[in-house]
Picture 1 (tube, helix red, strand yellow):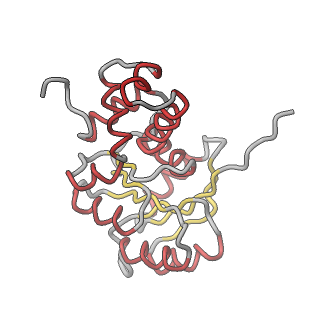
Picture 2 (tube, helix red, strand yellow):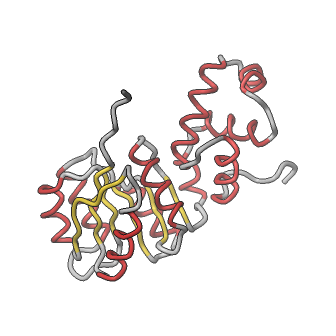
Length: 211
């Protein structure tokens, strides 16, 4: 029998009880995620982080005592490898840049589709970083999401190149191309190559050919 993977353990931090309750209800429908704790403030989140030891913390930016950025700093100080997904009502690219620069693995706007939030959670759990949902990336953030080589591979994917053609164009092996494609998908939270291209256009990483 194939072993069943343990669910992704989540700590949900938001000062709006109704929002928390609604999100928990949705997450309960997913077999691969488990909410192990909830907190309504930054201070409570810091206490619960040590107690719950979640795989990922879903963290709001605007909270009554310790704000999200400061909470993120303290979590990362206590556990440098901590994975934190900012889930907030802010649609500010500056807020996203600040959060990612502070160590957040992703930034998702609360009005994003449920599937987009889940995709970000799963991508981060798989090692993805720099994931953004609901806002365009600034120039600085775009440069940090993908490596220069990954951007080259992504542009060739946009132009319809397959693995062999990309390898020949860049002078690398097909295995290396597949490695880069997998990394691109993980970072953008995409299920396949087509999804990665769509996400890249949404985030401003790609432009139509000729522009």
